[in-house]
Image (cartoon, rainbow, N blue to C red; front, side, top):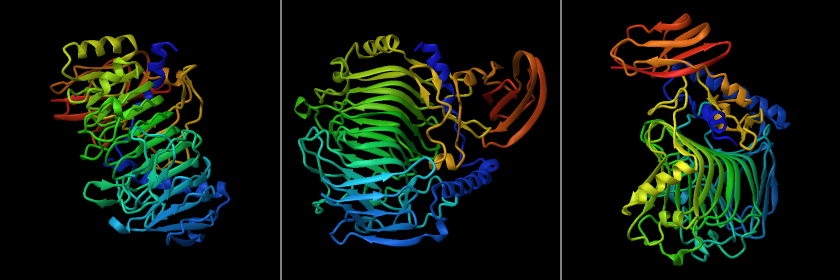
Length: 540
């Protein structure tokens, strides 16, 4: 696909509303959540939430057993609940699974042991939701409510780079049901489709939390697509080795990394979307990508196979303070057709002198490739972190040759990916033909869609309707000029950085003088029946 077409098709990926402080949209978000959930129940042919029976599930060493959980019940996990080896748990579309309150030894989590299987097959109209017991699912639970229960852990028999088996992160070491890793890369742990995992990551101890979705030694025979992890205290989705493929994965508002892989993960996926937290200190990297599982160990050839997953279509949306993607500790990988929006750094490749097989060595060996990736926000697209005299030059030349570029996208800036109109445009692109499918894969079933974060862009033609306007000088000392296209009548709105509408006027085409404003940050939205544009305006 032509490079310019790819950029145009991606450019509206990175408009995200500031969900924490915009008073104009809070009621809308709550109402949207209620309306969507009500619609979902009708489409599911499941009873309303208020008419479901609560059933408490306690493991007692017996696991879940081989049975089916149905959507006429709410299932409450009391502590760790295992799907033991040889068991198969089926969860019906529309079912709600809740973790009871508790931390440490009292934490609630669902663990699919090696040899066990889970068949959680939701649908777009009827998703399966994992959340905490106190979540009323009526829109009242905030997006930044984290650590209320454990999470979902799936363990398999696929290969890792330490040989396995090993104890999975987040489960006490005295539990022998929580080991993973073996020799069968085609291992099948079941099916997860249209599954939303919310508000997890409770602490088991100091600096020890459970990931939203942990995939440890999971094999390629496992089917996972359309999964969401939202508001987890630790990482969103973490891979420990294994060969599983995960498609259509959304991670939003997590307290640590959105995606994390290590221990020789060699699966892959497509259409990964990370929405990092607002600028309140939470949220780390869009992707923390390790070859092994330690950031302070010496990475050597003895730890092969190195992580080399293949990811097609990876979008990271930040708010200026988080790293985009970090390759380190011997990690390779193959990432194509991506966009990193408003991150503090783009893509960084480490080359540590005490790690003879660090990520830069994987790059030189051809085990780390990057193709067609745009980084916005005025930061470098590709960074070298090491001591080789020519390291930066080598990466810069590679970036130029392979379309890894620092670019500008209409409506974006170096701080916020914020659209005051209150939409996050998300088009599920077919990157081969350069146009959208006309249907957003996040629509309906996700927490984010239910809260009104996403709208659909149906084609490249829609993206091309973005208005060509300029605002200068910017920053200014008080006044600026807005240049509008040659024909038409336009609506011009000025918003505060908190989303409050401060001024609005109708303007003809040509040059328009902006009003005097006090020092601060503003967002200017220009629209007519031909399209719209958003500009950040800095007044000094």
